[in-house]
Every structure is written in C-alpha cells, then in structure tokens.
Length: 102
Length: 477
Picture 1 (cartoon, helix red, strand yellow):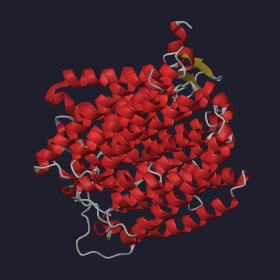
Picture 2 (cartoon, chains in turn brown, yellow):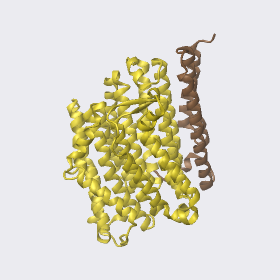
Picture 3 (spheres, chains in turn brown, purple):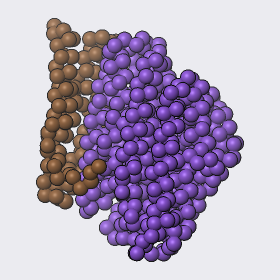
Picture 4 (cartoon, chains in turn green, yellow):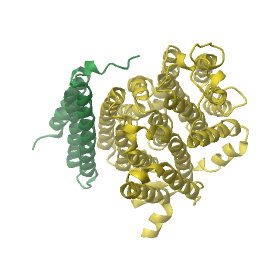
C-alpha cells in the first residue's frame, strides 16, 4: 500500500506550483488554472487525511465534495468576468489591466 | 431535533430566503414598467425583514443540525446590523441603477446583494468548517458579480477580475489551512476542535494559512493589494456594501473563530494580530495621504479601520466583542454616509470622484458637504461624534488586556488619519474652484439614507443604551 506521505508530497508540490503560477503567469486564464491547482491539492489533502487517519468518519470526503462544487461555481464566475474583459479590451493579458494603479 | 426548532432558531436565514424569493419573483413578473418600482419594493421587503428580526428572539445559545448551525443572541445582533446596512445601501443604489445601461438588470443587483447577505449570515452562525466555507463563498462569489456589474465600463470589469482572482486565491490558501487543521485534529466541528488543538508547529502553520484567507476578505495589510483597485473600479453602491457589510461580517467571524476554536493558541494569534494591526493601520494611513480619487482614498481609510477593528479581536473578551459590534455599527453609519455623498455627487455631476472636483462643494451643495464632513469627523474619531466613542471602547478593550504599546501606536495613527480626513474637508470648505459641482437635488432614497446615517453618527455615541444593549447579548463568548 502506498504510504500517506507520498500523497502529501504530491499535494504540497501541487499547492506551491499553484502559488508560483498565480504569482508569475501573465495571462488571466493561466492564473485561473494555477488557482485550480491549489484547490485540487486541498481536495487531495482532505481525502488522504480522511482515508489514512480517520477512516471511521466521512467528514473529509464531504468537505472535498463541497470544495469541488463551490470551486466550480467560482471558476464559472471567474470565466464570465474574463470573457467580459476580453469583450472590453480584446485580450486577457494582465499587463493591460493597468487603468487603476496606486 | 424536530423541524419546529429549525424555524424558531434559523428565523433570520429563512426570512431572508423568503425576501430573496419574493425579489426574484417580482423581477420575473414586473416587466419593463414595473421594474421602475423595484427600489421601493426591495426597501419595503428589507424593512419588514429588519423589523421582524432586529431583536433576538431567544436568550440562550443553541445548536441545531447537530452543531452545524449555532444560534446565539450576539450573532442575531450582528445580523440585524448587517441587514440595516444593506437597507441603507438599497436606499442609495437607485440613482445609479436608473441609468440606461443598468436599468434593465436592476433586479439582479438586489438579488445578488441579498444572496451575499445570506452567505454572511450563514458564515456568522457556522459551527462547522463546511458551513463556514459555504457561507464565505456564498458571500464572495455574488460579490464578484456585483463588482463587475457595470460590464460595459472597463474599470468595473478590471475590478471584477482583480476581486475574483484574489478571492479564489485566498479561499485556496484558507482551505489548505483547514485541511491541515483537519489532519491534526480529526474533526471539523468548532467545539470538538478546540479540545484537540495543542499548538503544534503544523497547527500554527494551518492557522496562519486560515488567517490569510480571512485577512484577504478583511483586507488587512499583507493581503490588501486588491482593495484599492476593486473599490475604485466597482460601482459606488457596491463599494459601500463591500467596505462595510462584508468587512463587518468577516471581522466578527474572525473574532468568533479565533477566540473559540483557537483558544489554546491564544499567544500565537495574538502575536500575529499585533504585527498585522500595526502594519494595517500604519501602511494604510501612509498610502491614504497621497490619494486623489475619493473612492480609493476611502479604500485605504477602510483598510486602516479594519486594523482598528482587529484591536477589539485581539482582546478576546466579551467586552471586546461588544466594542467590535459597536464599532462596526458606528463605522457603518459614517462610511455609508460618506459613500452616499460620493455616489450622489458622482451620479449628478457626470462621474466626478476626484478630490479636486470637490473644491467649493460647500458653496453649491452645503448640506452634502456638511454630511460628508460629519461622516469624516466620525471616521477620524473627533469627540462629540459616535466615532470617538467606538474608538475609545476598542482602545479600552485592548488596553485592558495589556497591549499598551499597540494602543499607543494606534493612537498616533489616529492623529495621522485626522490629517487626511481633513484634506477632504479643506477641499470642500476652503479651496476655491472656478467650476464647482453645480447645485443639484438628490433623490428621496439617498436623502432618507443620509439622514439615517447622520442620525447614527450624531446619536449612537451619546445614547449609551446602544452600547449597553449590545453588551447584554455578548456574554456567551
């Protein structure tokens, strides 16, 4: 059986790759994908903790189900807003979102 | 548990769902002509809702749904304060919603705003991290739609993108923290978790991530970078909602969770909060001085006000909670008055929100200038107004627990904040302008809301029964 630590290593790498991507990508959709990586790493964490440490209850499974559903709703709104930006400015590069500064 | 207890303890949320459904149905059947009456309908519904739920029905703390939902009279007080704030925002919103490019979707504004209010109510009453998370997201996802509501204006779209990406990122960080709390404690119920938290290194990391998530919502300083852009770009009614209602709910929830769930780690979160408070108040004050756009200026002012609110959180006592609720109430009156003036000037002058545009406002619109002045005096904490008393109470709450240096730094910053609040007053009363904003008459909703806010600014501090009345309900911390 695969030990718990390996799952946690994967989820931690996903988390920090997501943070790195969120801070360095210059395209709104790529930033959104990075945030999805963060949210998915959290889902892995919950499921793994539940399966290996507290198998008698289902709280972690349920939390990850709710987290998946809610992050889908958030992504839908985010994509709608990105489409709206595309309509206004004809591209989705972060460097063009500079009308308001300081 | 039987179903009657759901209705008798969850009455706020159930009544609010009723209001949302009624608003939605009215939006469907009203048609183009009927939508002109949307504001009176929404305001009457909200007024009924506020009148029905303003005083908590029960005096004892009760858990329903097996501890998922907690009823507490103090939570009831906070929810009614938030509902009153929403009502005032509704009163101010109509002059903006009547504009041509938003008039056909004005129903959506009311439904979305009420949805976020419902989310905040659930977030406040949560007794389990799933409830808390769902409430938080229900409050922040429709809020992103509201920020991007003026979808043909580039500023609004830009603000919406900045808001939704920061909200997603912060909720990701917060969930990561919660996942490690679950891994170390084995439960997600607030009550059970307290007993299993021991202050191990992993739990300190988890708490920091969790705090980062709520810090984004509160726009405390290391997490404040979205605030100014979002506040400036969003429609003014949404900005006022975001700066008061959303912030008040998040601050109260943060206090409840820190004091209840993280009670064994008090020394760690107190240290963290001290750093965050000093940074928030100081950095926001320094940046507020150089702002020329009034919405941006009030954004930085609200960041520093959030720092002051955290002074009540750090005390962690029932007295601190009373002063937090009172502070949110007073801050709501003052800030909604300031944003109401900005909104009505913006609508009636063709979008003027710069500080230089306000030069000579006293000569043309003396009442509005006076309202703005009193609101800013209250925000700065000048004695006869309510802001002085609310600041005094939170300083006392923090001082009582031994945070002397912290209170001293906050006091110095109050003096600095007085300078930039007075810059606006100087522009309105002293600076001369060749083309001041012409005299105009604002619509009745705005006038009623400004009168309500002014009454709050003038009376809340002097009427000591308000503070004592809130204090009667906060024993259960």
